[in-house]
Length: 357
Image 1 (cartoon, rainbow, N blue to C red):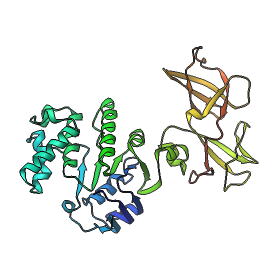
Image 2 (cartoon, rainbow, N blue to C red; image 1 turned 45 degrees about the horizontal axis):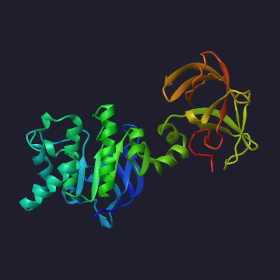
Image 3 (cartoon, rainbow, N blue to C red; image 1 turned 180 degrees about the vertical axis):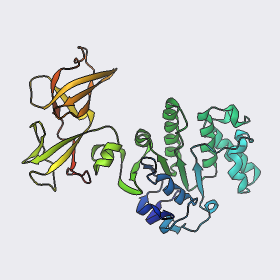
Image 4 (cartoon, rainbow, N blue to C red; image 1 turned 45 degrees about the vertical axis):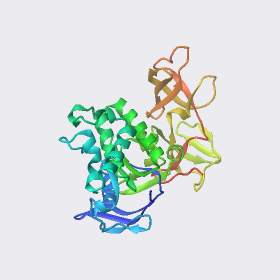
């Protein structure tokens, strides 16, 4: 049975260093929940606290209504998938998958049935009698996932499980993981530093920095309406352009004014930062007003062309525009940039909070 995870005021210390100062989080039963952030932000530390591999210096951890702070990891009924697979090199694929079931001393026929089920589910039944050294990285990761799931855990924990795979395999395996999680409906906590990976697999994401959760939300919410500048720059690509608040909108440094109806908690004259995704900038071709820019260079990528332009204040910005049959705009061409006002985000000058309703 899947359970929700409740974390209340968690604290983690290493000597005098506080890795997680005060963290609270609610993960729903059956949810695919991702902890996302740069290296050293505390995401793996938090995962290991959930697993029971790290001590807890403060706060309470619950699986459902069961307090697990002092519960042995073996009694938490978790499945764990590690970055380095951690499968046994001397055991065949079948014996690796059956390992947790044998530890639980289940009847032999039940072990065989459950092992066969997950070998087939992970599409590795044809490799059942092979040793791990005869498998590719993606196949080894499937073995690790099958072993973690075979025990039918309440919670599946995954720590950077795809980081050792090449780019093509990563995409393939994240689709496998999401499909399996959907079909089993198991509560999953997934750790990664790769924002594209997080957006591809997650129901919700917690963006972390320095042991603090910056924002929790769906991939769409975090991308379209980040709560602060850190989230905006960490999730996807964006251009951060200085501006100031004016009556009914914002004004950029070159004097271009943009009407915005959704600004809150700010006053006229305040300095601010506009976060504008590359696809939210438009090259004006019919003499409309816009931000002054000069094309530095472009990159043709088939469906889209990426333009890198220099603004009047010397800042470099990126634009993504659907590729056209006509010629690509030449380097050195002066252009005007329109802005999709309803989609951009505006933050306080220090980036700590959003000014968009």
